[in-house]
Structure formats: structure tokens, C-alpha cells
Image (cartoon, rainbow, N blue to C red):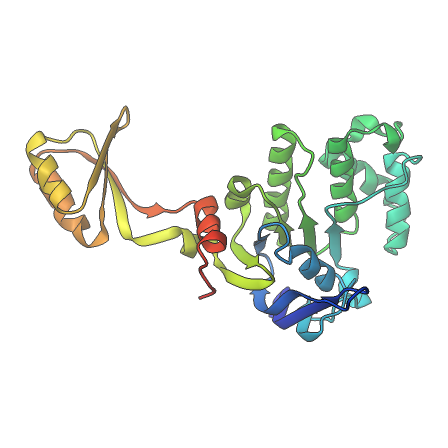
Length: 310
């Protein structure tokens, strides 16, 4: 099956009208997103994320390289009818109510069917706006407008959702609702390509990450593979005899006690020897887990530490 999104050697250059200065927004960017994946598209401000999304949607054209979306060229109607898009900055007709706005977008998408009213009711309930159907959009809060934008993106039951900062303007409860919605869309087999700066939230829902910085690809791949560090493990025990502590430190362990037990972090090569020593001393080994990095710390290393794509 063809990937949902393919970037192959994509380069985008802007030139200033005054002075003709060349600005390289993207340089030789290559990555893929498989169908059914949730992919986080990450990077600091000015990294090239918005340019990439505009190229993906067919709003801009690359200077070099190729892009395929659901097997089609960006902007092709055959692809666009299966894409739901929520831009970071958007504006709706404020004099309309939410049902009227969604009915307009449904017709623009060529989906103005007899079941339109039921579809609109279902989506407004899904984003928790069903109690505000008589209120004009001009009276909506920033968070309510964001929820309406999500409903608009889901309107045509797309196979691919492109979401640029989907939790912007939402309170913690609203952000949780959006993340739950993304998880349900993933369970339904949808592909989600999202850009966000709230990395701890992204970490809970995404399968893949693509990181760009200064217009270049820094890293892409499966998140679980990137966050699992194979060189260290955590061993949690109920207690630690004092005579073992120095031996474990000599083996490269760090020791931290808390109400849950004693947490030992040891090199992976010493895992078996440490566990056997603990068992021999009568300790109850509660769990042994690979140490996972956090997405935030990984991201900071990639964009601040100058790491390059693998």
C-alpha cells in the first residue's frame, strides 16, 4: 500500500521582492507517513513546518523534489476529497451559526446529502458544541472556535487529517478531548499528521515523529524506537541491603529511593548480574524496564544539540 504522505528530496526557496534575497525554507526533505499512523510534525518556530504543510495541501509548489498525498499529487481533487484540514490560523464567517457554517462547508466538499443535518448534529456533539447551535460564531470563545474548526476538518469523513496546532486555545479539559478524538480517529484507521508545540501531549498519541529545523530534516522514525534507550534499564526493588549498594555503584548504577521502592538505573550489560545479586540477597524485584527518554528531551537534543538525521 502506498504511504499516506511522501516527501522525496523536497526543496522550497523564497525570494524577497526587494533585493532578491534568497530564503531556503526547506532543503532536501525526505520522509514518509504510513496509512493509519499518527505522525507528529515537530520543529521550532521558523523550522519550515508551515511551508511543508502548505506544500502538502497544494497551496505552494516545491522548487525541487516530489510530494505524494494518498498516492496523488498535492492539490489533486482525488486526494483533497479525502483530506480534512485544520490550519493554525483560520477565520470563519462570524455572522453564521455553527450548523450553518458546517452546512456550507459540507456543500463545498460536495457532500450536501440528505443526511447533512444528522452529520452536523453528530459532529457538534463530538466536539461538545451541541449546546451552542443558536449562538453566532462571533460570540464564541477562542476555544469554541477551535472546536468548530475540528468539526469542519472531520466533516467529510476524511482518510487523512492534517492538523496544525489542533489544541491551540483550549483549556486542559479541551486538550484532553482533542487527544481522545485523535485516538478514536486512529482506532478508526485514519491517518493523522499533526503539528504541535505541546510535546508531552503529542507523546501520548503519536506513532511516528518527523523533526525539522532550519528547513532541514533532523530525524524521522517510529517514536517508540526513538524513546527506548537500549543501554540502560531501570530495576525497582522493595529494599536494598547496604552491603549491595556499593557493589551496584561500582557497576555503574544510580540509586534513588521513594515510597514505591528503590529505583536502580544500571547499564543494560549489567542487568542480569544485578538482578541475580538482588534475588540472592532476598530482595523482591518489582519490575525491570528499559529506560524511556521523553519526547521533549529528545526534541531539545535534536534541535539544540545539532544532531542530524539518521
